[in-house]
Image 1 (cartoon, rainbow, N blue to C red):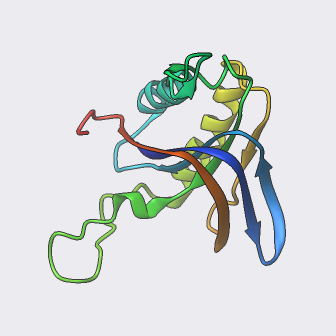
Image 2: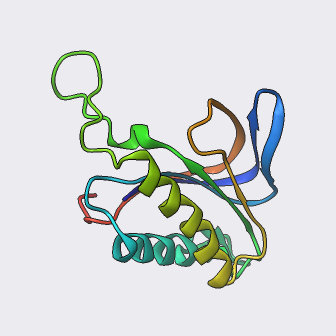
Image 3: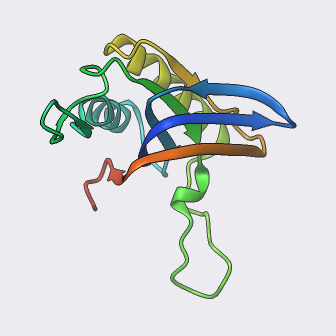
Length: 150
């Protein structure tokens, strides 16, 4: 699985003009599943996201996690994280997970984050054309991969 994690002061996800997910200060996670990913990869990634120490402490050092600051989380399905652009100009998505298991893993990611102590977890809508509006705080943007490729 792959994730783009952004520390945000706010984030809103809309589908056809309707807000489907909204958070205040916390993390926005663009989440994609790859071929062969399962619950072990999900567990690694959700624990990594929830435990990332990317929020400032009283000295301004990034020492606090999402749970420490009682931040919020929005999980946004993003199959294009598995787009391969190495050949030609059109991305290939052959390494992306099929829609049904990917949708299940995205929903499970959100539930697991709640179990791990995140108070408010919002979600985008799987398979929908979404408008994502956010304010990146810092800016802080991190790339995560359950295969630890980066």
